[in-house]
Length: 262
Image (cartoon, rainbow, N blue to C red; front, side):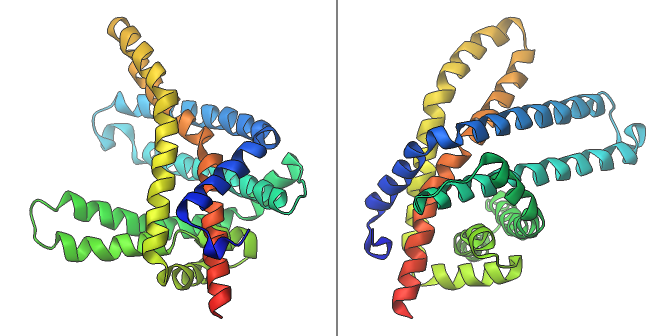
């Protein structure tokens, strides 16, 4: 398939097909991720509940707060293993090959550092964007400050693929992603929106029954409200490979387009 000439609809169909045809191959990986996420979420929730029992940082102790930040950092590092594993699975399937789940997870461990650096840079940009949004009602600077943030959020979106599939460093991947996306920014942004909405619709279809049931149960037991948030997080983590499968054809299309220009 010539991805450089493919329409948004064709790329979405290609991504859905890539996910569906390899679902059996990645189901074990999804199960491992779900179990890992459950343990990590339970660990974080227990710590937060203990911290919330106290009212001020002085009473809790800054050491405990630092421990929470370290715990979140560790959880983030663990979570970054799975996108690599999924992408390696899809890349192998695209080449009519197979890769063992254990091997794909080991690959994930080798990419934690560069992906973590990229994520922190991306988070700073996204955080600045969200901060600008929160101040939008107070200042007319909203548009000139937010638009560059949105532009860079889209232009850097292919960085993880370059890190994982082309073994580029985080800063090199950021520069390369920007060059790849820049001439196709509107197409890439539109595709990401369509892919995001597609995943959101699947999420709502799965989450709504839980929401209905837990809304009834939480009337008697308020603790179920917190449990519902954990279920939401687990559903989103289970849909991660679907989103990766949808964005992967976009990466191939953008790369093919850039090569055809060169």
